[in-house]
Amino acid sequence: MTADQPTNGDAVTGVGMRDGAKTVLPILVGVIPFGFIIGLTAVQTGLGLAGAVIFSVVIYAGAAQLAALNLLGVGASLPVVVGTALVINVRFLLYSASLAPHLAEQSRRRRLLAAYLLTDQAYAVSLVRFRERLDPRSRWRFYLGAGVAMWVTWQLSTVAGALGGGTVPASVPLGFAVPLAFLALLVPNVTDRPTVAAAVVSGVVAVVAAPLSGAALPVAAVSGVAAGAALALSSGRS
Image (tube, rainbow, N blue to C red; front, side):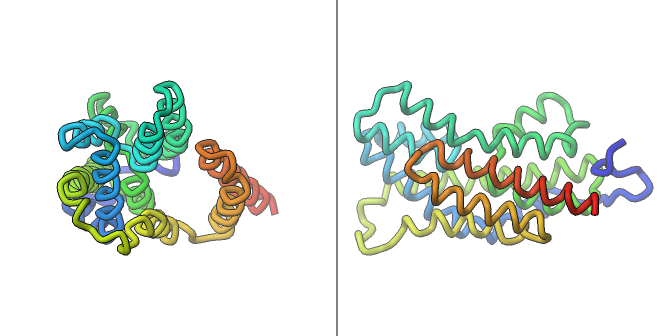
């Protein structure tokens, strides 16, 4: 049994879906404008309301959705659109590897649902809460509550953007909500020297690698993880 998997004697029980939804609630304030932008962009691209909803339900990956819609809007080929979305979503491989030990006891069906509901927001709040050594049932309920709350908010925001995006004045800085939403995820997880190193290195690399477009995010993520892991290993040896 690993350190991340509690024994029956010290496991925290009684955590439910409501706890997950309540924990992710403050972050959803920044998610709503992000989803609104997605819905608005989808309509402007020519997908229409039905297309915007289907696009959001099937793909359900904010940053990748926005990049794909922008590429479709300028007439990019399908391979370019799909390739860019895949590159942007590489970070979810890291998220999955991190969450796998915590959800390993769940059924295959539940793990597939967890994969579909995986977002930056659900991952961030769940990882923080899982440090409390929740029992397997509580971990699943908490993650499901956060994931479903995020999914419902995202879809409703997308519909709102598709329906009413044209009524928002151009002076309203909706785009600023996107980096704010990700900053809200970052701060609670920066708790020690390795996480500070990971945050700083990934931020610097993201800026330097910006000309790489879609590749900048995974390059920055891998660099940050490597820096944090290296510092954690060196600290453990000292």
